[in-house]
Length: 67
Image: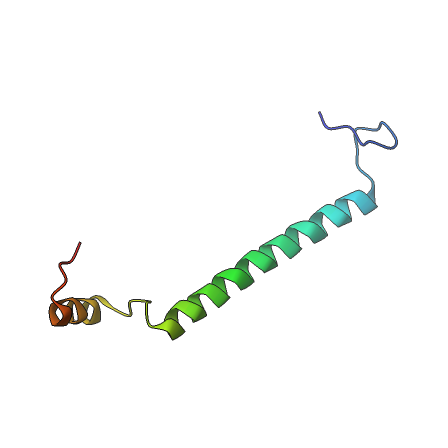
């Protein structure tokens, strides 16, 4: 069982719970933002495959074997 450090009580205070939720929501927001920026960067750099037909056409044009 987790015990609060200041009071020795097994139940957290409202402030402790609010800070935990704040940090959790902040972390989720940062992770989502990183994912969106990463997808936008991949799309802008041209390395993000749009569909299978375009990928196959690019492979056949360059002569590289597919995996």
